[in-house]
Image 1 (tube, rainbow, N blue to C red):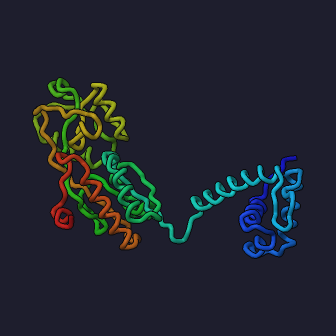
Image 2: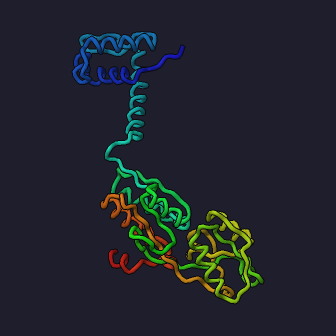
Image 3: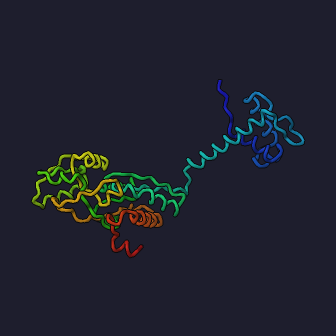
Amino acid sequence: MARNLDVHVLRTLITIVDRGGFRRAARELHLTPSAVSQQIQRLEQVVGGAVFAETRPVPTLSSLGEELLGYARRIIDLNDEAIARLLVRPDRRKLVVGLSEQFAGILPPLLARLRAADPDLRVEPRFGFGEALARQVIQGRADVALGLRAPLSPQDRPMGTVRLAWYGRPDLFRESPIPLALFTEPSALRRHTLDVVGRGWTNWKVVFEAGDLRGLHAAVRGGFAGTCLMAGGELLWGLPEARQGALPLPPPVTVSATFSPHLDPATAKLAMSALDDALGRLPDSAFHRSPEQAKAS
């Protein structure tokens, strides 16, 4: 039959040793001296030997007790660490932040800024399409969402604009029709791109669709198709921009942050400031703050 060390009893053992006596340990643990003695007796039954060689005038550990004490301290330390980490305290808040995949690179500075301002704040990041993430905020399943979309509701705040660029092998943009890779719906960037290329005279066709940024990167790196993404891709993803003029370049798009109306004002203000700071770490060629944000900064 398995034998188990009782954490409560191990804590009593440590207290006896550190306080130098059974009675002192009893006072600190709010127990009677007899209760402390009974705990040590139970411990001795588990380990199969005497824990103390002497108990008076000062408790002296046996060789078995000395070895056990080392394990006891490690077990108690691990127990306390686990409780401190896992226990959901009333003052520990959670912030669910949704980021469009193209902004995944701002997560490290965003987390650093939030951590520095509020160490007790728990942050849960989510990635996806901006519109879907904003919908999660409206539905109460997220607190903040950042994406390539114009402000559509009172919960939206314009953060700035990003420049767009074409990516792909230069020869792809000389083909007719030009092969394009786009996000699947619902994607504001997909609709924005199709709206722009649809106005031109260039012959093009969609040959690849992906539900995530990794798929578009693969299409570009594999030479399968060209795509339109946020500028600064060489620094962000190692993708050089395609220097060509066969397709019109889409104009910059707005970056908006959607905030839950249920988010407390202090946390909303912190999230806004942290997002603005993190976006400012993007390449200068890619992101430009809105006049409101530039003034606030």
